[in-house]
Amino acid sequence: MKSIILLSTLAIWATTLNASSPKELVEKNCASCHILTVPTPEMLPTLKAPAMEAVLFHVKEALEDDKKVKAFMIDYAQYPDIKKSVCESNKVAKFGVMPSLKGKVSPEDLEKIVEYLVDAYPTKPFVSMLKEMLTNDKLSSLKNSPFLMNQSALPHLTKILMENWEKGTLNLSDEQKQKLLVVRKETMSGVKRIKKALSGLQGEIIEMTVEAEPREKIKPLVDKVATLKAEGTMIHIKCLQDSVAILTDEQMELLLPFW
Image (cartoon, rainbow, N blue to C red; front, side):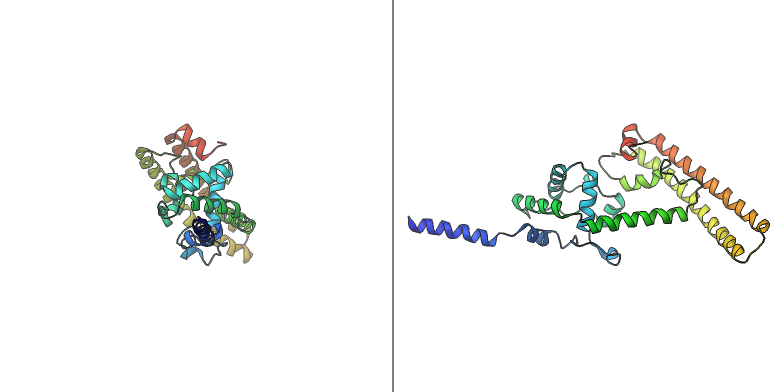
């Protein structure tokens, strides 16, 4: 009897000694693809998968509370599917869908991993860095905008659609996709043509201004810039209206909750 108790005690000790901490489980099962630190710009071209900081940022942004986040992550880790993804579709296209952990990680360990990730990420430095990047991107897009109007009330719907293209929650039909791709092609070709023309004109205006050319000589070029930007704005409005006509009210609610 004593020997049985002794063996049982030794077995429990062995299990305890061999048990991995949640952090170790994450490093063992996740770190080969997802980096666990705040990514630097130099790292981005070589990443095999989104950084764990970015994964948790997007999942927490998309879902309402930690309980839903944990349930989503446990399900997705076992049954990954592009239609379940909460990341932008262009990121899914770049990295692909993660391999399933079902059968590779026990349900108990998977719960520990998810608990740890939800508690640890995203960190304040990453959120701060991301907000700064988004601000810089917004300023850059305004500086190089081919449009007269740059208001959030006139969103770039074709861009938002591409970010959500394969999401199951959006549920675009094949017919909708075909029509929306035609709208996108027409919009992008028109905007690209205008941006090219604007680049040359704006460079010329800057040069003439620096060289103190008379304003009367500069004005015709400024008028051309205004005309091109007005044309670009109408292309933007047409894209928005054509896209809205293709989408259902439910899809619009998902893409633009405050539209």
